[in-house]
Length: 136
Ligand code: THU
Image (tube, rainbow, N blue to C red; front, side, top):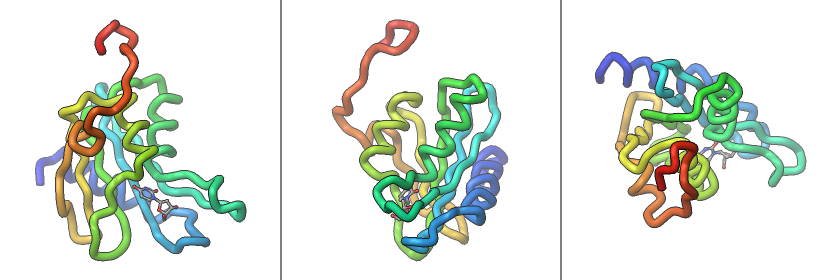
């Protein structure tokens, strides 16, 4: 694992430990590396009115944007169990808002990274508006 991938993994794992998931019991952590090199992490947050909770990706993106950053250069998602915790449909769209199609999205379990996708392969033909620089 490269140094920055290791840092992403550790940040996501630390956030996962704080997941507030009393309804599903499924702990998710996400770490985003932004253009500055800073890492923003987040966990899923569930509430008694189940559909109103939100994903770890959403928490991390909100923290990144609140800190004044707009570009994701890599992402890592860690979830419980043996499967691949890939981002849900809504979070694929949220990631695509701030990440180019070639941005890697690593999917991990407790032991490390299990698979790597890109934003473009997770959300093919996704809806995008031009960005602030006018790029499609
Ligand atoms: N979840 C995430 O936070 N991110 C994902 O990529 C997949 C699913 C959360 C939503 C919910 O709190 C729990 O996992 C189980 O669905």
